[in-house]
Length: 323
Image (cartoon, rainbow, N blue to C red; front, side, top):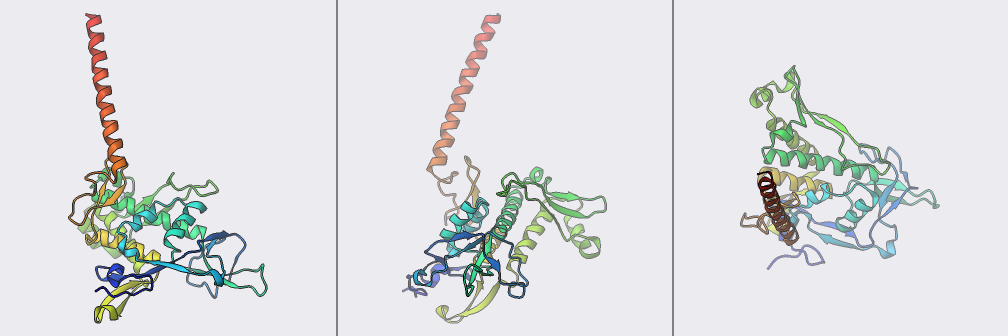
């Protein structure tokens, strides 16, 4: 019999993935955006990037507070779902209502009330940065998996001095609500005085290995100081690694995918989205993420074949006329 670790009937087996385990709560009251809250002060929010208003918060009503718990690590593509979130207030709120806040809270105060209550929340800019960051890493990782050197050429740039950078240009998928484009440049640590051995190992002008190095290093940064070992009483003293928030859980799922310990993903032939394979290693729904994509693919394939026949007949008729 499975031991329950939660009043909602969730077993420890449901929370674990490899040597990791995690249970997370989502406010059943939903979330709202607030433009008027103020930071509780740098001394409270030090060592954090918290952004600025608007803030995504749980409505502060202790009488109505309740939460729904779930096991994020049991959803193998949750990190990819997060990377596809539209970086608008609506898109972010919809995700948070289903899966919860990211867990890196800022301490906020509501100066409209006296005494001013302390509220925890997360800024729009913080969510946007995190969505963009993991989305870019996933795009890079997919190019590595597909051995797409042409695609990697757009990101991995070698200098004449044998230094290498991973460069991200403007993404049309990520306009901010104000219409400005978000762009950044990230340097891979491959300077001769520090990583000369790495450069020799990769070989000058390599694309895949610097990109792989960058993806792994960024995942490591997001896990550092956010995943801790604990002895589990539910597993007779076995040691498990627990993330301290939802964002860290996303990077655990990402790390399992990169290491090959997560079920591999396949690319849908119709919509080009990635979906996890079945437990037996075969793609779910064969080569399509669902029946809708399969039907659309077959429809367009049949339509194109029919159009090709018509075009061939038209060309043949024109040839006869010319003769």
